[in-house]
Length: 377
Length: 230
Image (cartoon, rainbow over all chains, first blue to last red; front, side):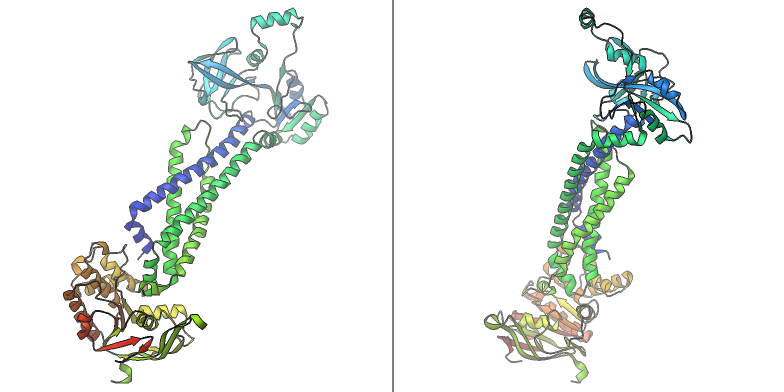
C-alpha cells in the first residue's frame, strides 16, 4: 500500500494547486536558463554564421564584435592568396534603423560577397542573393516576408529569402546584403550633407574598407601558423574562430551572462527554500497521523518513504508543469529562449537533490514524533 | 490460572520525569498482572498515571525501574531496540484510541489492512482479513468509505477492527467509549469482551465512563502513580 499516493489522492486539489505554484516557479527558473542560453546563442550566432576558420581584423583591435575594425577591402585578395587558405571573403557589420509598415525596425546589416565566406549557411525560405544590388536576406524575426521591399538608406531592397537565428549580441535581427550595397550604406550620405562635404574639399574617393576578412582553410592547414603570419603584417591582426567566440563571450556578453547567472542562482535558492517549506508544512500537518502509524508499528522507512515520495512527486510534477509552460510560451519572448534537453536534465537533477534535502527537514520532524502523542495524555 | 495465561506482567514498575525539585513520579512501584480473556479498566483522576502505565505496557515509554513482561517476552531489559519494540507493538499489541485516530486518506478497509501491510501480509490476504473484521463488526458496508464520512460509532468500530487485525493478544484502549452514546458504549464493550474471549487476548482500558464499569472483570484504581486497589 503506497501511503504517499493515497495521501496525495485524498487532498488532490490542494496538491495540484501546490504543484501548479511550484510549476510557475519552475517556469521562471527555466525561462531564466533559456534567456541565459539565448543570450549566449544569439551572441555566438553572428560569429558562427560565416563558418570561418580565421578572422582577419584591424591591428591592435579585437574586432569586429568586441571593438570596431576597419581594414582595406583589398585585404581579402591578400588573405585568399596565403598558403593553406581555401577561400576568403570580406565582411561588414552595421546597425541601422529602417521604417517598415509604420514601424521602426532595428536591423543588423551584414554585407558579404555572395559565393565567398561570410553569408548565411542555410536559407530557410526563398533563395540566396542572385543580383549584385538591392536584394537582401532577412532573419524571420524582422517580420519581413519574401517578396517584400524595404528602404535601407537611400535604396529600396527586395527580400528574396529568409534565414533563421541570425542576430547580433543585442538581439537585433540580421539582414544580409551584398558587400557592395553594404559599403554604399556605410558611406552614402544625404545629398545636402554630401554637398557640404564636397564644398569643404573632402569629396575625394577613399578606398573602401571592410570590418573583417573571414577565411576558410584547406584541410590540414595550420590555423596558428596562418594567424601568426597575418600578425606579422603589422597593420592586420588575426583570430581563430575559437578565439573570436571566446572574445565575444568574455567581452561583449560576459557581464549580462554573469548577471543572469547570478539571478538564476538566487532563483534556484528561492525555489529550494519554497520546496523545503512546502514539504515541511505538509509533514507538520500529518504529525498526528505519523504518530498513529508509529504507534501501530510502522517502521521508520515507511514514514521516511511517505515524506520523501511526496517530496519527489511534488518536485517532479512542478518541474513537469514548468517545462510544459515554458515550452508553450518561450516563443512569445522578445528575445530567444533556448532550452536544451541537457538543461532540463540538469534542472531535474538539481530539483531531485533539493527535494531530498528539503524532505530531510520533514523526515527529521517526523522521526522525532513521539508515538504516545497518538494516544493523547 | 496457569503462568502461561498471564499476558501482561508488570512488577515494581516506576517512572519519573525530571530530577531534583522538578521530579515528578508518574508511577511508583506498580504491580499488575492481566490474564488471557481478562478485560480490565484503569481508573483514576487526571495525573494519576493511567496513561503512563498504558504507554509503558504499550512499549512506547520505557520505565525508570521495574520489569515488564508481555506474552512471555521481558521487554525493556536493555536488549530490545526501538525497532524491536515497534515490531512487538505490530505483532502483539492493538491500540484503540479515544478519537479513533483513523488515517483520513485511507478508506475504512485500508485503515484496517494497513496494519497487515506493515506486518508483511499480501494485499489480497490483508483485504480479506479487513473485510472479515469489518463484517464481524457490522461496518462491512462502509468498507470503501473514508473516515470523514463515517459516524462516530462506525469510526470507532473500524478503529477496533484495525486494533484486532493482526490478532494481537494485548489490546490497549484509551477511553474507547468516550465518543459514543450510552447504547453504543455498551455495545462496544460487549464486543471487546467477546473479542477478548474469542481471540484469547486481554484488554486494558483507561476509562472514566461509569456506565460501562460493570462490563470489566476488574477495576484498577491509580492515585499519585500507585495502585490503590483492584
